[in-house]
Image 1 (cartoon, rainbow, N blue to C red):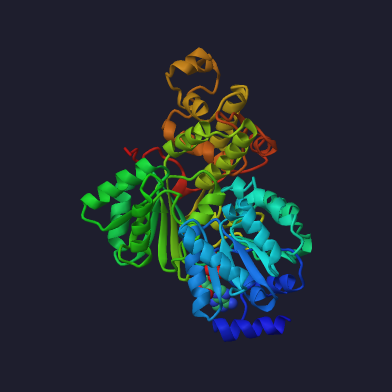
Image 2: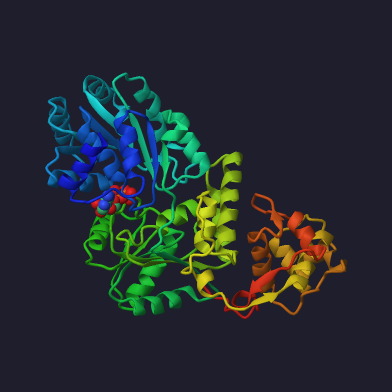
Length: 520
Ligand code: ADP
């Protein structure tokens, strides 16, 4: 059977061989085993369900939350000579009816639908009558409540589908899946462990960078002036930021597009089309833009502010370099970003447990911005990716490795201070005490009378804050989850305090406190 699949790959698609994970995924599906494929963006997930869809009898139904992508997928299949169609809310009711009739008449091999379609009992009855080849869940992390883009309507269709007896096999595909998401999808769609194909996440053409202490707008302007002919996306944390940056860059005479949920559908469509067709090279957007955007020549993705989770960061940054060419993923960090994300969590309608989860994920994101380890390895470790290399030799941490300096003494002072403060305070209060700040709160808690008060007064409060974040990121200090996480000592801290462990810092990143504070 796989030989036939290989033949389809060559004759229909014109590709000589499968990419990692494709062959295993396809054989699993052809053997009618429910399958979950986790592959990086650009890894070639579509082929994984399209080839079995062609081989197996019946209609292949692909459920996707990405209405904007359906037409492209269907056009691509049609251009290969394969009968495919889609039904979603972008079509008139008459057109939807016409397509449903054609599907009933078995004129199509592939049908793309949005999850909402399954709210219609007419549609479900129709599916019940059809011979079905497979049902595929694209962007499958959206069906998991642990996913970063959970869509309850996506999840709620699973029981409706399971009630039908004519679906031979389920396929789930995603580029982002933590262990929790993977096991949630497995439980929901009954996927056995041996039918989870996880190719790992590494995209070796992407170089990750963290930029700190720079005036963001002027950094962007000078970056753009060096990369004039390249296409890129600049993600902002809020609509307001997107509008402001768009106005600033437009005022400087740059041709940029903008995309966020506060714009009308028509404006968004135009903006997206201009970017996809290379009429405008730079897109300024919130996270409303891009899920499933299939633009291969995006050379850089800049995050104007730190996003909330590593999952969403990796997915957004991963829109760079889908063509496999070297591309940059740049995160512009400022400490205000942490406050903004906490504010967004507090403002959301999540229950306490969900908020706690978000704070946990946010802490990982903060750690990413402060680690001295390889950024690629940090991300892969986060996803429990079994990668072997500890350095990628292309991220900003790997590139800026110069001499290491022994900073154990200073680290011990920070840890002693946390201990003397009773392990009851967070990063900013600890930085204030180390600095010897006259802040009212420090006095209220009588922290100005402890022996470590002002012990590192030769550093700025900002530098000390950075430093404590570094220690948390490197697991030399523990922190609790929540809006005001308190610092605690762990075994590593004790080792450092006892002198059993040396704390090295790369000299380029030792906080001096001289970095410019800037206005947003
Ligand atoms: P994903 O959905 O995983 O992000 P796609 O399915 O859109 O990725 O595939 C990304 C690109 O890789 C597409 O242009 C596709 O045609 C191409 N591709 C997929 N499989 C192969 C293969 N085996 N050989 C060469 N190119 C492939």
